Each structure stands twice: as structure tokens, then as C-alpha cells.
Image (cartoon, rainbow, N blue to C red):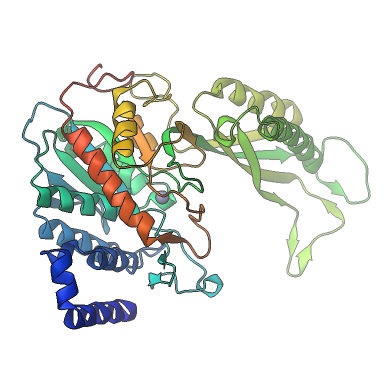
Length: 450
Ligand SMILES: [Zn+2]
């Protein structure tokens, strides 16, 4: 709030001292670049970091923005204290499926001491960089949607398709109480959505990046048991020996996947990644561990990411036969964020490949706004999009940030104000193109066809 006050004051002074400059630039002061940046800063200054996000404050802010541009709004709490804010810009043709622009309101925590500027100050430096947790992931996108609509409305544009904006909680902790419940709700069904936009990644080059699918996440825990014994004795089938045989096998698999990447044969998101997250064994004492005892149990946990095109059944077979075989007294548990199959039992594959009309519209819209799109990619980490894809909907991951280092979840996350402003233009072009598109889009997994 302290920072918020300072910025408001600063803005106030600008208005006071340079009314002439502003009035010649634009008749409506809310459309000036400084007002646009100030609104972005205001959203960034709301501390929505997990595990104690200020969701209420964020919801109030979003609704105040919706009111200022006359959008319909409602707040839905599938889980108490975790609001989903849903905004609507009604289209003139109700038969056409609508567009959903999704963004999450929470951010990951920040280690304040490692930041040059306070992560919730939204400090704007001399180079025009805005430093804040969420500046890339993904408060920028949520605000760009709103600003693009503000401009389209000011220009008199009328959408044919309805445009919905959803601001969902908890993406950073799995999205179960946010996007997952929203996508499965009756309210969601009633929106008649045809295409979803959600987050992508910054691009260090000139070209924007866009994603049509993402790797799925498995959390694997393998557990070995064996007879306990004296620390001095050599014998077969101890828990740790059993576990290490598996770990060695897992490491060989990891190397084989990594080699494909290193050789340039596959992209990061096209290989199965597997990394150890924990290793648990031993009998603790107040000062350490019992040292003359071989434990009877040992466990290891792994984070596995699987490309949508990978053969997940063969991977599961590998777990059963090689990584946690009963023959070595091993068991395993496997948790996955979403099923690899949609509600029709089809594997969730590339739901918006480059042959779809949605993709062509995106490329054209970005081009019309004077930028270029890189080739379609698979997202290397996880987002909320699988919840929408699971409903059979095409979903595009897109955060318009070019010439920007990828700093999501990193210290000193920032976005340059010019890139941010350019992104608004890009969304203006995208929303215009999608909202005036008349044909029923043909997409392999789209609702229209099913
Ligand atoms: Zn995100």
C-alpha cells in the first residue's frame, strides 16, 4: 500500500503539472501510456504470492477495471476465499462459440532480499523495466486483455462472438481450486466457449512464442523394503540396495532423453524429463542418523514431465518392470495433475496445431500488429490449459513478450513497458480477429466438431 500511495501521488503530480501535454496526446486521460502503466503497476502491487495470496484485493481491483470499461462481471467461489472473477463482453451473434481469455491471479513467492527492487513495488527504472513478481507470470497478460478491450471499445468495435475473461486463483499450486473446478462447472458449460487463450512464455528473440500443448506432470514415488541388518554385514536385498538399482536405471533413462536434447534431435518439451526431488532413508537420532544399522525402508521421489506425443503406457510399464519391480520388494505411487485422456477417451494431443483456423488467425493477427510468431511449441512446464483441453477445447498459450529474458519464478522478474504496451496492441488485433471470425472453426478436437 505504501508503494501504491507513492505512485498515485506521483501520477497526481504529473496530471497537475502537465495537463497540456496530456490533453494534446489524448482526450481521455485513461488512455495515456502513463495511465496504462500505472494500472499495470497497481495490479502488480497487490501481493498475491502463494501461500497467502490477497485474492480479495485482486478481485476488487479487477472488478473496478471491468466497471470502468462497462464489462459484465461476476465472482464465483468454488472454494471459499478463492474467487474466480468472470467478465463478459457480449457478442452480437449468440450462435457463435465464444472466446475465453484466461489468466491466473496468484504468483509464486519472492525472496525479497535477492531482488534489486521490492518484488511488490512494481518499480519502473530508467530503462523502462517494470520489476515485480507477476510482471511476466502472468499479471501482464490479464491486464493486457483488459487494456485491449478498453481500446477496442473506445474505437467503437462490436464483437460478433462474446468475449469472456476469467481471472483464476491457485494456478501456481496446481489449479485444483481454480481453473480445474471452473472448467468442470455448469457455468463454464453455459459460456459456449470455442477457443481459450492462456499463458505462454517470454521470448528472448524478436519472435513471439506460442504453445499448442504442454507436457504432463507425473509425481512418482518409489519405495523399497528389505530386511534390516547390522551396518557391518554384507547381504543381498537391503532396502537401499534395491532402491539404488532403480535409481541407476532411472538415471540411465534420464541420460538417454537428455542426449536427444543435447544432440539437437529433440526440443526440451519433446523429451521425457525425470529429476529426483527427494531421497528418504535412515533411522534418525536427535543429532543425525543411526550409523550401524541398514534401514528396512527407503524412498525416492521424482518429477516426471511427459510430452503429449509420448507413449505414456510404455513409461508406466517401465516403472512397473524396472523402476519399482515387486521382485525387488518395491512399490510405487504415481500422481498426475490431469488424465492424459479427454472426456471422450481420446489422448489429449496437439489441440491447436498449425493447420487449424485458430492458429492461422493468430499468425495473421500478430502479423497485422507488426510482429511475428515463432513455430508452434509444446509448453515445457505446466499451466492451467490442460483443464480446458480436457474439455475438448483448443487452447493457445501466449504471452506477448519478445526480446525479453525468461524470468518467471526467478529473482528480479521484469517486463519492459514498451513490450507491455506492444502486447496490448497485439491483443487488440487478436481479439478483433477472433471476435469477428464468422465461420465455425474446424479443429480436430474442437467442440464444434464433436
Ligand atoms: Zn503462470
